[in-house]
Each structure stands twice: as C-alpha cells, then as structure tokens.
Length: 117
Ligand SMILES: [Ca+2]
Ligand SMILES: [Ca+2]
Image 1 (cartoon, protein in one colour):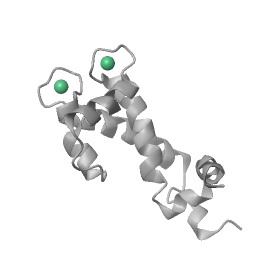
Image 2 (cartoon, helix red, strand yellow):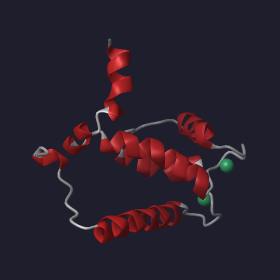
Image 3 (cartoon, helix red, strand yellow):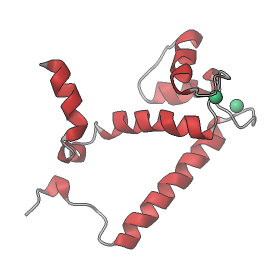
C-alpha cells in the first residue's frame, strides 16, 4: 500500500493527460504574459517579478542577465519560448522540491544528499 503522499489526486489516465496538456498551455500563457513588450522573447527586466515571486529578490540587472545567459542557447541575450522551457525545467525542479509529495521522488534529492556528505 503506497503512503498517502504517494497517492495522486488523479484517478484516471484522462485526468493525468489533461493535466499535462494544461501545464503546457499554462507555461505558454505565462511566457506570453511575462513578455511585456511583445517581442516573443523574455529579457532580464521581464524576468524580475517572476524571480522575486520565487524568492530571488533584489537581484541586480547583471545577475538576472547571468540567469538568462545560462539558458540562452542562441546567445541573443534573451530567452525564446524553448529556452524559457529549459529555464522552467530548472524552476520546476526547485518548486516541486518544496512540496512534501515530491519526497516520493527520491532521485530528485540524491544529488543534493551527495553534495551534503
Ligand atoms: Ca520581451
Ligand atoms: Ca535566446
């Protein structure tokens, strides 16, 4: 019997697959919203509020640019949608680790444990 933390709130494949589709759409919506100047790319200034909301407040423009540069494959200084998805993968890992349910995914924490040893 799995522990309660391991039990999904979804009870059918359809629910789970709709959730995945919904997540993709929400990510697209977030990208469009964050792109305040509508140039279809996210620049450092447009990332500011999101980083603050995630607990990274008071980053300098330089620091924000460094974050973008990590994911900026075509080196144009901004994140397009696919680069933003890479960024989101990192954000997702960070956010999901804060959820008690994620302890069920032990491998998420293995690298961290190894570093701590
Ligand atoms: Ca933009
Ligand atoms: Ca880019």
